[in-house]
Figure 1 (tube, rainbow, N blue to C red):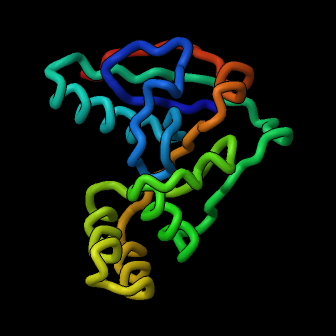
Figure 2 (cartoon, rainbow, N blue to C red):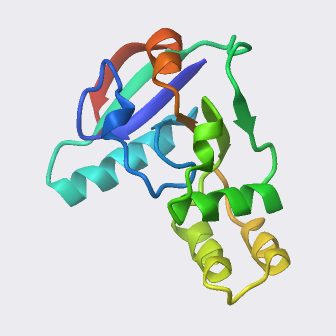
Length: 159
């Protein structure tokens, strides 16, 4: 499967040691199957850093049967709680080698933040986010999975 990572660097050999902690699915190397989403991530990162936006393209093995994968097929209570716990700094993501699910982008995060702050309950939050266009993200948590199953193809600058 072809996946993309948007940023400001060409990353031939991703290393999770450089990952941030308080993200949707915790510490890991984030990719998506949506090229446009990776380009958006790259542009945002490039603007903040005053650097060229770069998208890296990889082939991620379809055969990950030997790894522990959490796949949130729906944006439900489990997905919401997992994201909130990771954003609080809990390390529940370490139970998995990879985590797959929807992105809590700016619009979705506003709703998740209302839940996070206790202003909305679970039901209201999930009701709100179902109206937003959701993209996906794959957080690769296990460095061995990255080394063995993720192969760099190429990179390009986003214009």
